[in-house]
Amino acid sequence: MSHRNARLNVRGRQLLVERVCEQGWAVAHAAKSQGVSRQCAHRWIRRFREEGRRGLENRSSRPHRCPSQTPVDIEETIVVMRREQRRGQDWIGPVLGVPARTVSPGPDVPYLRECDPLTGEVIRASKTTAVRYERDHPGELVRVTPVEWWGFGAGVLADEGVAVRCRGRAIA
Image (cartoon, rainbow, N blue to C red; front, side, top):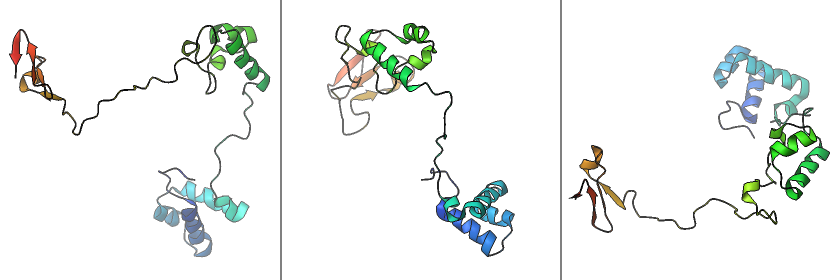
């Protein structure tokens, strides 16, 4: 799946190759008609000539290997130490000989501040508000008066009909 700003999807690449290889268009003209650079057009034509139709398919951008990735045994040790010893990254990092940033919580490991100190269970799942005030129209709850525009801090609660006081005087 190509990203939404991509000039060429699979069909566009096929059209580019057809125009250049079968219809005899110049690469620069075919590239211009597709809205891409000559270098991009040459890249797709080269891939087509080397790999055929398969070369025009979308490829994963994930690297084939990652030599600096933390070894699996160290990852497992970090998770165990965080859960059992309840220590943070500044303590575990030097003990295992890895940077503290490597020890920071990942997607499966909660922050220590979110866990119960005794059991290690997550106490707070999220910071979402349970109660929401929903109105029919934006700004329905608060009405702003011209005095507030000048910075005096006046306003009226529309539902309550209560005037907000500014410097001892009721405004509304």
